[in-house]
Image (tube, rainbow, N blue to C red; front, side, top):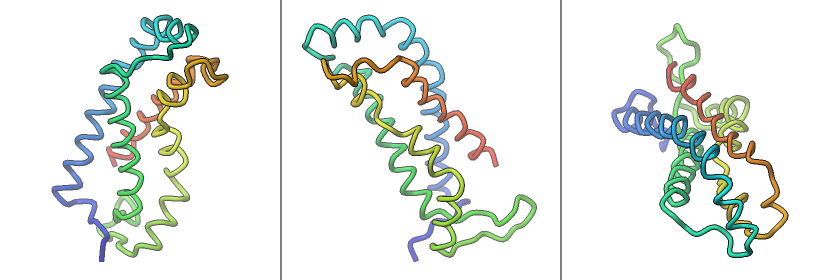
Length: 148
C-alpha cells in the first residue's frame, strides 16, 4: 500500500538529489577537513564550542536528507535481479532485503558527525580524530547503489 516503485518520477528526483549531495560531500568535506579543522578545534578547546555556521547547518540538512533516505529505502521496491523486470513490492521482503544489504552502511554514512564531534565543545567526543568526518565519504558507495 505504501510501497514506492523504484522507477517513479519522484523516486528518480530523490535519487538525483542524493547524487548531488554526495557530489557536494565529495568535494567540500575533504577541503573543510583539511583547511578548517584547526579553526573548529581551537573553538572547541576554548570552551565556547563551535558556532552554528552555514557549514554546520548545511551538513545537518544533508544528514537529515540521508536519514530520510533510510526510511524511504524501507518502502522502495527493488528488482529481484539485475536482468529481470520483476520488482519486489512486498514490504516485509523489502525491509529484510534492505536490512541484509545497505542499512548498516547507510546508518554510518548518515550519522550527524558535526553534532557528535563538533557539537561536543569541551567533551571527550571533541578529541575524536578528524578521520571520523571522512566516514561521510562512505556515501560514495551510495553511488554504486544508485547506478544500478
